[in-house]
Length: 308
Image 1 (cartoon, rainbow, N blue to C red):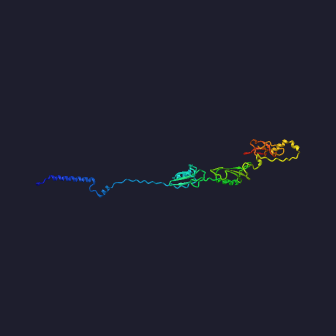
Image 2 (cartoon, one colour):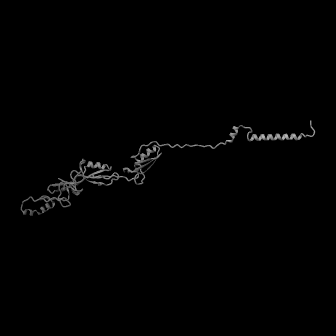
Image 3 (cartoon, helix red, strand yellow):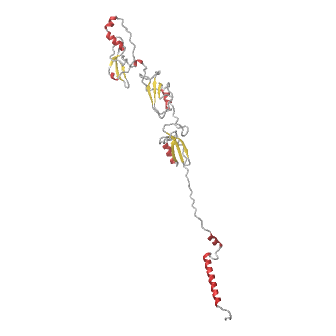
């Protein structure tokens, strides 16, 4: 029943408006905050995800232990070091700055964590006392007066070169067994720096040494030797001597006995004697010696000699 003085229409309109406002508010609340969600959900919504971090670990392998390569060749030392995982370098261990070859000898080695550096010298050279120092080349020992056996031992201590032997006298030949022969001369001289495997020559003799090489142990073997003029053993008259002046002259100039004629003479004009050297042009020829005996020039290998 309607009471006089009050209108109903405005009341219904206001209620509708209020319901609309409540509905809109609930919708907004649901969309924005979930309206009534728990505290855990709100905290989870407030936490933002951080960036992803990737950690990479680098592992450096330590090379296996390597035994000393000193005295090895550069090639062998390099191969052994690389097999053990080392990075290898090499340098000249002397004062020079040459590039080491494969056959050089290692004198020094310096290791890093995974590397090794070899200091080397040329093959046959001795190692310096310190890396980068001078090569201490040995010097030739003095062996004059020693036996060949002792001299060869001393020389072998400074060089691996060949040792040649020669006779100190022109008319002497070195025997196959000469360890006890004496050294009279040497080359190179004592005190000479021996670089590398230098060859050595030793002059030997069975007895006493000559003053110089090229002399004769038996002076009569010297082609230039002048024998003494034989004394005239005849007691005949002067007429007999005068009658054979030509023959006497030939005997005197040849240095032979009385009545001796030397068909072949040395370059100095003297008669030859048995044992002396003869010229190549006289091989196969014969002549009378200073003592009057017939001698022949024969080829005896290294030198030609006059013999009976």
